[in-house]
Length: 119
Image (cartoon, rainbow, N blue to C red; front, top):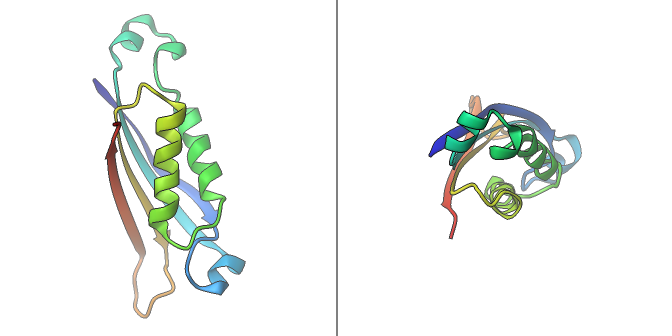
């Protein structure tokens, strides 16, 4: 087995419960970790034998572009789509962070993290 990580994927998205968040948007970062078997690709040196991180990044960016009220909702969509499109992935850990959230306080970011295993 092995792990592929994409760290701090940056997007400008429109998530949030407040009406203003849907209009003005905010900065987000996404951290993604997937478990898959890397043994074959480590010997063949062939992209066909591994999980293409370009595809993972595309899925994250496309799903982050679809507005959700809750970070949990967009994270669930990302996880569901990755499992659907990439059968060789057995586990996903995903963190979605809203940078400078509109809350009463000096908070750099708020993050939700979800971990799911393939059924």
